[in-house]
Image 1 (cartoon, rainbow, N blue to C red):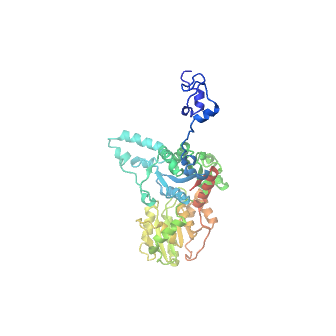
Image 2: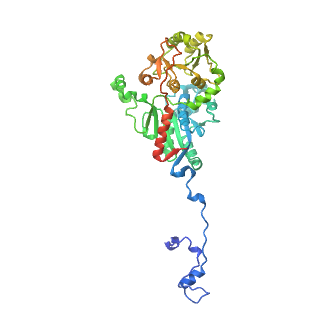
Image 3: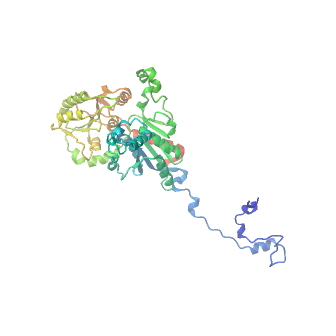
Amino acid sequence: MKNQTSPARLADPFASCFPSHSPQAPTPSSSRSDFTAGELAMSIRPLLLPEPPGEVDRAPEIFAGGVAAVRRAVVIGNGCAGAENQCLGLVRALGLADRLTLYRIIRPTGGINKWLHFLPISLHKMVDQVLRHILSNTTFTTLFQGKLSAPYPVSNVQSLGLSSILEADSKRIVTMVRDTFEKEGLAIVVACGRDTIPYASSVRCLAPDNVFVIQIQHPRYRLDRFDLVVTPRHDYYALTAKGQQEVPWLFRRWITPREPPGPNVVLTSGALHQADSAALRIAATNWHDELAPLPKPLVVVNIGGPTRNCNYGVDLAKQLVSSLHNVSETCGSVRISFSRRTPQKVSDLILREFSTHPKFYIWGGEEPNPHLGHLAWADAFIITADSISMLSEACSTGKPVYVVGTEHCRWKFSDFHNTLQKRGAVRPLTGSEDMSDSWSYPPLNDAIDVAARVREVLAQRGWTVG
């Protein structure tokens, strides 16, 4: 063919560097048709090629020693403090807390949107856009949309030590990971919560060679879309004999999970969190002047709020008030904190009973939050049964933990409390306790245990965290 290059020319990339000698075309300077072997060797000067740069022969730094290094973490959060706290706790345990990028999934807010959280987030955003279009410039806009231009609240940016939080977008995350791969190396992606599931699975689908994706909390289906799934053991309560008895036969096919945990599932006793030994040492120093001088024993009371699987009201608050009055004689000092979920009626009752009591201090929600200081300095804890996160944090200290309201829990929450009791980590609050009595147990170290498993799986892949 006309445009095809001669194979002979391609065979020698340096052919153009030598003089051309053809048997049919003798050179003008010689009457002979060719040279002898000796004359040819004398006539050609040696060709000196430049040495290749040293970096060419060396593997990129992230593959030093033939092992790929994971040097950064990407967290996909849903705006819920409990869920994001689990992600950040695992990142801390992996030693990547100072190399972290946080993306947050932002649902539409205002007006009717608060009733649309049951929808998948993509559908929710689509409905929101339709409503914005239909209801624009009408008298119904405020009713359905609220303050459309109100910014999404970012309440824990400062506490995370981050200057900004980016809105989650799978393609944007993949682009960032790939564009910075040569310099920053591989990335661990950690997500938690229902809304994060499609984002985390998409990142793994689009960039499987650049990321290791961990989904915290059971995604309910298609666990193979993640490298690891981290979930509490009580999420599999439906598969136990007792769990099967509690579920009517007609509804069993709708209860998830329906299969035992696979090889990519890591089971925990409770929730992951950031209250590791290093964080508590820092908190002990920061809160020394305020908490160290308090009379001992210092008892910390954490009050949550009712949930679907642990429902209660003012009745539990009255039970707690009675028990606190009974044990206060053996307490040196008591500090009480409420959560975001604490009902107003419950907090009002506690305030009426103890706001003027000389041994009691009630935190009013102002900054700084004393939570880590309480974990570091408390001699014992009293916690409502609804909060798996608060119980997990307290049980990581190895100090006495008393629980109030376990009789209100059902289903997997009940199984969680049974697990803690079998470990000797918690006891029910009866009101007859001597709070100066001390007892201990092996602390819960779920974040450390999960981090160790992550390192094992990475090593099987030829990756390491470093």
